[in-house]
Length: 196
Image (spheres, rainbow, N blue to C red):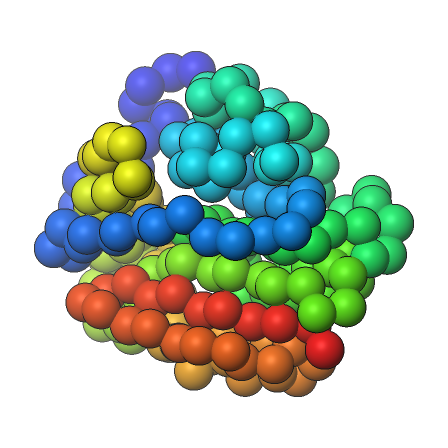
């Protein structure tokens, strides 16, 4: 692809300060579905072969480190049976999804989770977008895993109204999830949700 068309013009970018995310190992009694598990493949790198990483873009999955089972799939319509997974994760993947699809993705996560299964979300707190040309929000991340650090940046379409943690909590609770814990630091957050 032509480089000129694959990257947005610099005047459209608004970069946030680098955020640090310490990702500790977490307990899960079985298979983990990682929504948007391509690219850096952080959850797959942390949990290895217990992860099924899904992403709609083949290239993102090919770029991810080995370990998980990788499947090209639209997360708005997961091709798994009800109650298949013990855990579902979304590591900085919901911020790439248009807001109109968030509830659908949360419903699908709820459906494929077993009862008492956990949904773990790490994502961006997007401030409201000011008027002007800047419509892409860039968040540089320093991700600390137990065995190494990953430095990366994610650039996402900047929603006009912004998206705070409450936005995701309200959607999750409307779908039927219980909120177990909520953490915010800087411009990032972590939610631990559970299917009753």
